[in-house]
Structure formats: structure tokens, C-alpha cells
Image 1 (cartoon, rainbow, N blue to C red):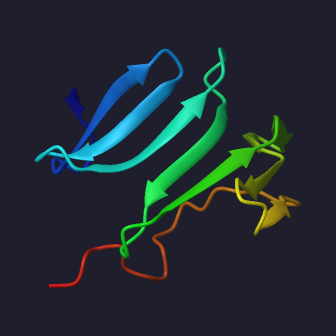
Image 2 (cartoon, helix red, strand yellow):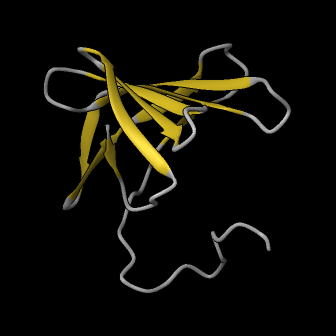
Length: 101
């Protein structure tokens, strides 16, 4: 396993197409499946209430200079979407992603 930008998290290949994200203590936080080109196929994560969420993604599409999945859907069918625009911001986010104190 190798550390990522957050030293509290670890990435590990669990299967040829599945990457698992876990805490330094071994608790699984999420995962994703990729195809042979590295494009995302599915993503899932644990919820704060102990459940899970999982999504499947459509083929990668060029949105100008950004390649991104064309669409996504919850595996349980509850939620789905199509991306119409994907862009990259060079400025900071308007919200903090830091955990609360």
C-alpha cells in the first residue's frame, strides 16, 4: 500500500480492476473499478450511517481539454445524471474540505 496526498489514507489494488481506499488503521473508506485504459467504471464508498453508496459511469468523453465520464447512475437506480459541461478551476474552492475540529 502506498500513501496518497492525505497521509491518513492508503490505496491498495484488491483485484486487477479494483482499487480500495482505506484508513491507516485498515478501515475501508471507498473503492473504484477501472477498465483496461484506467477509465472509471464504478465507484463506491461507506456512508456515515454505516451503509454504502455505489455508482456506475458511462464511457469517458472529451469535454474540451478534460476527459470525464459522460454519465453516471447509482447502482440501485435511485439517481442518474448526464454531464453537459466539465471544466477545471485554477482557483481555490469556495468551501473548506477540511474535517471539522
